Length: 161
Image (cartoon, rainbow, N blue to C red; front, side, top):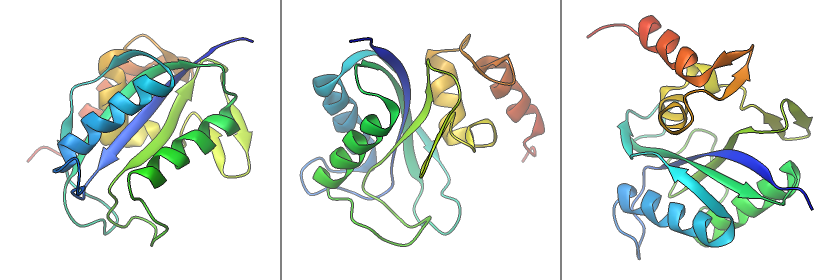
């Protein structure tokens, strides 16, 4: 069976009874991904402001994993991990103990019900783009531009404080 390379976005903004603070939840999620798939790399954990009413700031990272799973099966596997970590259905953009998203994969564009790869908001979301660009800067996924170029564009477009 062929293996696929996935870029997985990882986020948390709620503490977990076992793992503790969101940063530790993200570290535990990376370890879990490494257990279930072949982990190539993981980014440093970044703290990002919440958006869309999610409340507390998020701890975010990205991981590169290799898996024999096809995209829809990978999504199911990620949702299973979220559930194991205590994520329950709630309001969109709400606080969450763990959020795992397929940001990209080596198969190019993919569209299915409830799943679009690359992630539709990847190029506009620093919490997803910056960690993935740190570990895969030359990966070309959107419009032929490398992740480092997309990250540079996003940094240039962000308002300065």
